Length: 334
Length: 186
Image 1 (cartoon, helix red, strand yellow):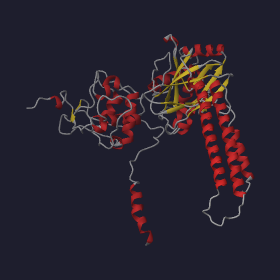
Image 2 (cartoon, chains in turn purple, blue):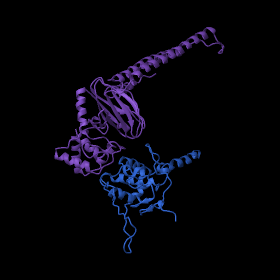
Image 3 (cartoon, rainbow over the protein chains, first blue to last red):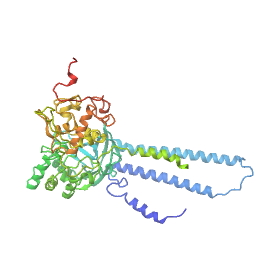
Image 4 (tube, chains in turn blue, green):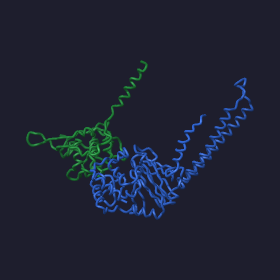
């Protein structure tokens, strides 16, 4: 076989993609740990078997034997030896499969042993964004946000998954495996982050044109930071003081924005698009597509179809002098 | 001559070029279309009432894509709240043969844009113009004024009746307060 040194560079580059904020090989929670351990155990055992098989095959191919006079002749000694070898191989295969099944079952018990914890979220997959509802025993403390989930560090968070239109799949590789969101039924998955940080998730089931731009952010922070964030999110949006932002609010309330989006504390109550009550506090707009800046918000409003072709937000006919105040207003919604 | 079998194949492939036309990207800064619709065919004097349509209706009324988009928007914008899946509730039924303000797509577009007395709000400026046309195209499909092949199929949500494409085609009766379907046989 010819060695192809130029292949080493792309392989190394591809593998370097396995680190970072969206990688199953970079686990940050017990569930992802269990999965990652499972992966490495499988890789080690199956890799060893594959190497051994290939070595045996090479040995067998290299060995030369004098041809028999009669090709149909059998030797009882060779036959017996071959029977023993094949029986051992079959037994080893069965043992390997059985033990890997047991290891896999053990890991799955960690993954699926969940009950209602202190924090439950109802996450609904939509084309092409994630609707996140924080549940609470007190209805006044429930709220809705989009595409950004904050969780306290070191605590189990139960996520109930639903879908609004087609099948989606919730996948935060650093925290847990995939779980499908299916219209008409509810699936559950639990996540826990052991270290504070920002992890990225992604829809893992092709759901339409902009499936690849259906990301979400998980922010794991200390309990105090989380409580502060939650109190801020429960509160309705404050009316802006800045005259420019006030004009932007007026644009929002009188233009098509109000038909789809909700801003709590105002008369905007649309439910078909992401809740914008605290959109300025989110790190990304367009489900992980663009960082939240005034310029990006304006670019998104002017032409969402250029940034995410096929997204359900239509082109809105706004006058140029209306877009700047609108972007200022949305950015001010912290 | 050996490649003669390629000929029917090419013809078959070319038949796939006959596709429904649709606009993928509406113009960025188009205002609303200018429709001049009359609700009554009666006018004083000899000249009939003037009527002017932009011709946009042809693009939308029999187009399967626009009708299915309209179906989605109809539910998103809660037309169900008054018209209840077309069966009528506090608003009039949309799937029957009675059209108080006219049943052509231009009439329906004007009804959505302007609003009508006794409850229908005006959605001018609240729904972009192309989306209004799509909703109107869907409303027409409720009573099967559109071809079966273009009308939308079953929705994912629970449906109170057969899908739009499975309803029998309707006959349109313009105007009037008593629907012809409710009149006693003579």
